[in-house]
Image 1 (cartoon, each protein chain N blue to C red):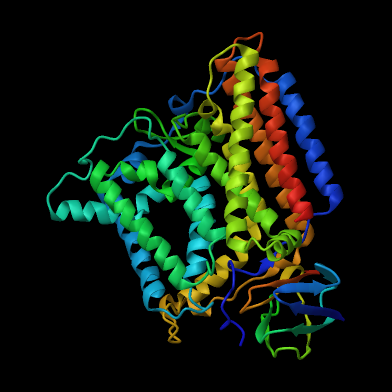
Image 2 (cartoon, rainbow over the protein chains, first blue to last red):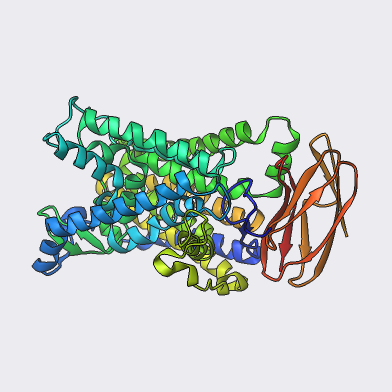
Length: 440
Length: 84
């Protein structure tokens, strides 16, 4: 029977042990102390130069990365992968042995984080939707960048934030979300609407709307690798890279979805949540939808309120998007803490399943012979320490980013006091994250 | 021994989260008022549940972690198994 059973809900079925209480308290105390130390001791003049910063990498590297050969090779990799997985999703059996759920929820959604930390915004280079649009445009001899309609500058990342909600809803709430018909239906709608958008607004639509590009773009801003304003590839400090993230409309919303959905995933894995949804009569899908939206809404509202208060204190007109970049490291810390073991364990398992996408006993790519290493599952102390370290490190990076932005935007005399609301809301996110690791 | 009763889609059990040591034998007795299927994550074991007949399953989880014990047709979480 093993392996043939369908998962009623998400992938895996294993969660990490709760972290020890003392470790949670230690992490929270550390975050608090370091926050005030940074506020008191850090620089008073903004140091980060965003996209103007960085040490240039050798010219040949920039040329190699930008050459049409490289670009087409990456597009072909993305498209081939999508076709391979698409075949499994359409023609493969609707069983837990189908790799599609693991590919979507683990390799893509979680794997995109380390890939982007390492190399920057990589998804746009392999994004199969972009490639399909490009090929369609080439077929009818139309410039892919040219759309029929003009895109308002106020759109920003709002469509991507909406799609991020839609994807996290699929991942965390949708009924039978690990089954092939459900995943297929979601992606059919997503790919269809994305292509319509690309035809309407040109290929730039992907940068505004594609949730995986947005995710990769945000996380990729914490990479050591960046691109200078003059187009050269540079090595730069991750926080300086993050400083270059454009503070456009919808940034706060996109970041709030990333943080809020991970919070909700953690809270909804607790036994009290399951008990409540089963017994209140609301039903798991309406309750989950509400829970997900409320959590994201709370993150958005608390952050917007904190930035608004900071602006009041400093007597400067400001908006949440100007500070939203500083939530990216906190969200990434959360993601690492919650999905590290899932990525390692289910990631390996998904690779093995990919050897036999149609359930015919095939061993394509030779992946079927991989031995899954479950070592990490037997290291609860190491895992708990890594989880707390990720959350606290994300918090510290967030505080430092917000500090640099505050001393740039706020008058010198008020810059420190004005940061207190920001610091408070970040401590709130971090303590919530640690509490969820302990209690959920 | 963990006893679980399901009546009208409501789960009755002593604890929402049951702690166990890795390798420890756990015995679960489940009585459901409808036919269903029991699924124990972590060992990936399933058992058929016949309406109003107590079904006993014995198993041991070797790996530390939190695992869900649930029914398939009604998608109910019976309890979580916390293995140290």
